[in-house]
Structures are given as structure tokens and as C-alpha cells.
Length: 402
Image (tube, rainbow, N blue to C red; front, side, top):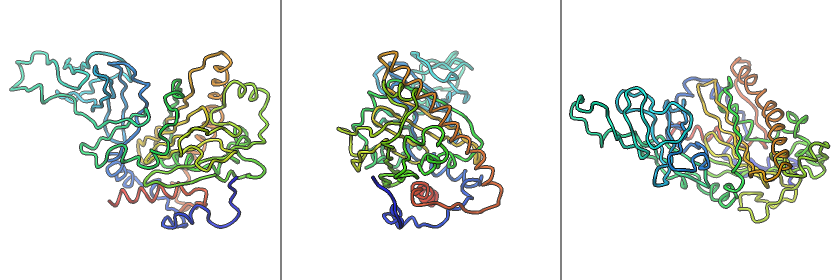
């Protein structure tokens, strides 16, 4: 087990980050938010979802990216290729697709029925002769760079991305390649809520596990924190360019309640597992080989936290709306249940995750934002186990000053 006894265990590995307080201004400033929009969210690769959402030709979903001031169509074409387009008609700028998801052979704008193929090409203009020298081949949907990594769909709204998706994810992405995402991500549940808090306030909650022993002591805390590791000091914190990785212990002496034990017998409770097995997993999953491992996290910049365990996946994505408002998406992924017992286990896990963990985490966001904006203090203090929060601020500044 990794237990911090004294000194700066993690910061000593990354002295360039420093150990001083972090300013509050980036959490509350409208001007800072505008710079984040232009220099970060309009420049980097953003996770949209998974390939299982569009398994067949003509399947699509739409993502409204308020932070990028656009709406994006993600579609699987007739050739099986995944494409992305700005959801904007070439005629008068109306959104072409209004529903959140669906299937079809074409996209038809409801305003004047201009029709586009799954490849984005403009196929039909009603009363075409009424327009002056129209060239349909030049008036298709505006494409957006799209690529996939381990079944996750990413887009980049920059017309000329500076790097490929694989280059962007780099070493931390490679360290998770080979995890059975496709096997596990067959049953997805999604929760979305808009909260009155800056997106970084929300993301900070999932870049450290120091809060678990305290905030989650009534729900899941005892499954992780133990008498020998009461504050849940992690097995690993590692930085990879703009991204990061963490690995979290389990409490091997955890005693589940009778209903938890019954659910656990037929599956797992989200990420709660006593000493999950990482045998055969890629290097980023339980990288220290700890016997008391529970889950590992891939924190990829700017706004997504992906956590994997022995049999389950949780993902949090924070979509900025304004400097003090965020759309928080939380997803759980399980293998498709084959028996009623497995279904009970997974449903119980989801229920405890939503009614316990999400409520506990979410209950802090708006209260924290309110006090950050009060002006009572100008800085926040970060401990050694909160390295990833400090790293996020440093990376953000690097992008804003590029």
C-alpha cells in the first residue's frame, strides 16, 4: 500500500508545478472564461460519446456545444465511416437536425427542406432555379474533424487541428489501450444536470479522492478508505502533457451491508470492489500492481474524467455554459446483464451511485461557487494529493498564453 508519511510525495516528482496557493479568479471571471473558450475548447479534441451510440448506417446523435457556440451532428455513413458536421443549413443558418438522436438516410432542414446526405453533401434544393448560380457541390454541411480512440468519439472544431487525436492523447492514451472498453460499454446509463458552478469546480471533484473519506462516508467511503489509509492516499498520480492518470486503493477489510453483499455477489457496485483484478490489463490500469487496487483514472484535458475498474466504467464530462454554469454529464458503463441477478446488481450499483455519490458530489458545486465568488478569499490551498488540480491550472495557463 502507498501511504504518505511526510513530505511532498507527488509534488516532489513535478517541482515545476510549485506548491503555493491557486488563484480563485479563473473560477469566477467572465473574461477568463472567454479566453478558455477561444484558446482551449475551440482548439483541442473533445469527447462526444461512444461508437455504440451509432452502431448502424444512418444512426446519428446531436451534441449542442454551447462553449463552442455551435451544434454538432455525429453520424455513421452508408460506408460505415463516422463523420461530424456543424448542424447548420447552408441556406439561412437554421439547425438541420432538431432531435437529439435518430436514424435516417438524409438530413432535411425543416425550414425550407434543403436536404443533405449522410456524407454531408447537399442533395436537394426545392425550387433550385429560383437561386442565382447555386453550386450544390460547394454548399454541403460544414465538416468537423472527428476520430475515435478505443471506441470513444472525439471531435475538434478547429478547421485545422494542430495534432491528431492519437498525438493529443499521447502516452497516457497508449497506457489504457487494450482495456476491454467495447466489452464493458454495452450497457450505458447517462445523467445530465446543469449546475450553477464553473466547470473547473465540477472537474476538481474528480481530480482527487481526498474527499471520499469525508464527503462519501455514508455512501461509498468505507469501500475505499481504511484504518491503515484513512485519507485514501493514492497509489499513483502521474502527468502526461496536458493529461493525467491516477490509481486508487480499495479497503480490503470493507464489510458490505447485506443488500450490498447480495448485489456484489452477482456483479459490482460501480467502482466498489475489494482488490479488483488487473491481470492482463494494459499498463495504465493499476500501474503499480497493488493488491488493494480498486480503480484507475484517465483525466484528459480539458473536461473529461474516465475511471475504469475490474468490470465497470464511470465517465464525468463537464461542459461549460458560462463562467458560472456547467452541464455535468455522468455515465456508467456495464457489460450487458445476462441474468436477473446481474441486472439487480447493476441497477443497485447505479442507484447507489446516483442517489449517493452524485448527490453528495453535486451538492458541493453550487455552494463552493457561491463562496468563491464572495470575494472573502482570493486563493485556494491545495495539498499533495490534489496534484492534478494544480496541474490542470498550469496546463490551462499554458494554453491561454500560447
